[in-house]
Amino acid sequence: MSKPTETERCIESLIAVFQKYSGKDGNSCQLSKTEFLTFMNTELAAFTKNQKDPGVLDRMMKKLDLNSDGQLDFQEFLNLIGGLALACHESFLKASQKRV
Picture (cartoon, helix red, strand yellow):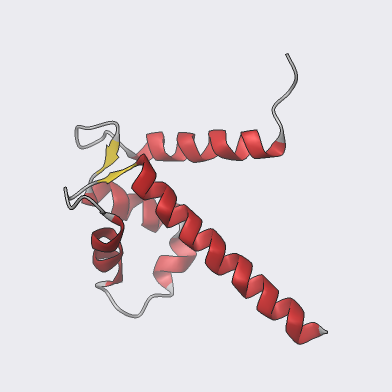
């Protein structure tokens, strides 16, 4: 069997991170609000520490929770990751355009 590609390893990592934080409050297929906050404060600490508005994480959770069940399933979690990746990509593009 061949070793996983970089992209395959990234997908495995996303799944592992989701599973690391989900299930502590009961449902291993979803992140509760508490699990989401723990994830954000641990895995994305630089982002959360730079927020001046204490309600930003609550609003993020509500916006990501497309089915309004008070939890984030893996698809909703991926929407967060995708949004953050897109914002980072756009930031890198702007920074590289300023250097030219």
